[in-house]
Image (cartoon, rainbow, N blue to C red):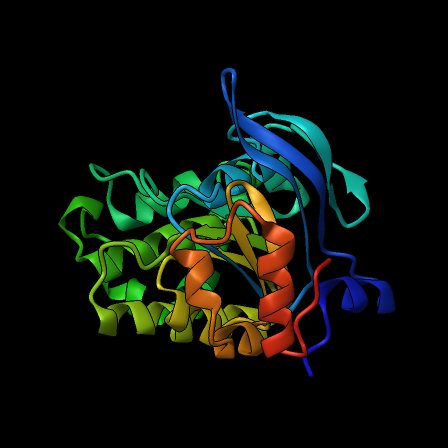
Length: 271
């Protein structure tokens, strides 16, 4: 059975990301109500749930794009709650938003240069070549304008731009949005899974639940801004009544739904 991110972090010196009791939203509207999760190096941790569950808002609050009104975010044991995005990037947290993820008027190489804005200037060209080595299909496109790329190429560039700062933890918000099923599968298996296998911790918000969970080690199910359950991704994927959560039929009673799903998938746990 896969080790939970919390257990893996406790077992080794690399602590990863710990989110505890996070509350966030927009103005007077609270979207995320006390969400907690962990992500360890070398694991893909999925966050799935119905539309409006608060998944993207959660990532924005962790990444410093919006303010958390309660709770904490720790990166490698350091409290980084509500730090600016540039400071988080310097500390090893990368973020790829669902939209506005690249600069369309700029060339691919210029996008990567922008992604490396926190690095010492002299090290940027070398880092670009390292990122091209990680994502070799992007290198022939280095002089193309980002706005002319296909959907899959654009998302690859967005991930590459985030990799410029050498993140230890990478937040990915809907990386397969608007992609064909084949391209979506390629992004998840060829990029996301491979980055984790190379030691990076990844939190993946993904609306393509089945495809997303197949590349995840651990998963959290959100509905109505709270965690309904968590457990090994394969167990959650195998659960017969997980669809009820995604249809929103049980979000009003998270304890009941989590219990039912956990009973069908013994490896899952309510944490």
